[in-house]
Length: 196
Image (cartoon, rainbow, N blue to C red):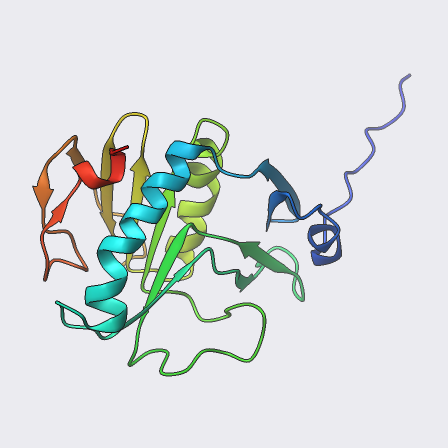
């Protein structure tokens, strides 16, 4: 007779804090996910999208304003499987409408779910982003999600329905010029995400 399988210990926020600073760490359902820092194509797409959106929407330059947009904010949501614990995730970009979050919190994290998130996919993170983080964002009521793939040169747009389920993805490719919810007040040239 073999020994019974040892129950795996749930990771805690203290485990996340112990991860070396040259790594990216997230905590979902008591499981610690540790990844390397993003590759150049990933960083380029994230930086380019930040440049396109932050002026018109965060600062109101050449656009309507009304948003607080941030790079890699740490989000904390209650872990429904373990009261008192948190799921801690870091989307590549996130945005809150100013009327929902008129001031930044005093904490080092955000407990209020954003209105929009963007994940830039990479081979090492795509499965986590799609199968664990997207359901978590839906559970917490994030209204819009964008998944950017700098290798395939695609941008997928998801909108949450009234049942907190993601509607079908609208996929844009290559050098398309598009208006995408919730930032459809401006036209976005996707080629800037893949250039250089």
